[in-house]
Image 1 (cartoon, rainbow, N blue to C red):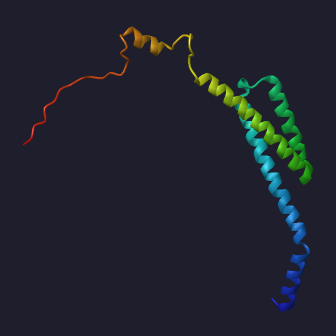
Image 2 (image 1 turned 90 degrees about the vertical axis):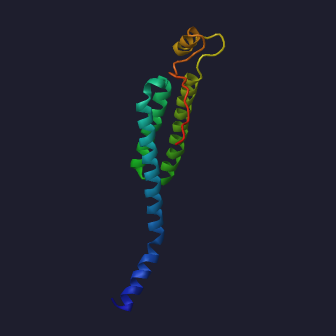
Image 3 (image 1 turned 30 degrees about the vertical axis):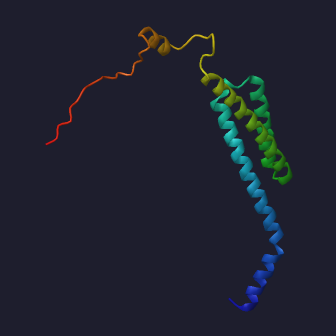
Length: 141
């Protein structure tokens, strides 16, 4: 390769640097949005029975708009959709978290205890731990 060819390549690279930067930005935003759409949709489909119909429709609408933004190739529109899908994803996660923590709290005061707790009380406070008391003697040789 001659020195002249190298200079032309460098000049060409400098000329297209801004184009390359914009294309790189578009690809990065598109990938972020694609991944967020996929993850949000998967979470919604996996836990649809735990989400209200109105909330599910709202999230699906947001995902549809986001897919249209990806297809448009408009970086500004994709960034805006990225924000919207992020909000929808957080709302979905919050709904699922509230349901998980509400179910894990167990019986409160005045509520019926679980079957294991009742069985332990019936056995005089002894649980089902199968503990056996033994005596042993340490013999040294």
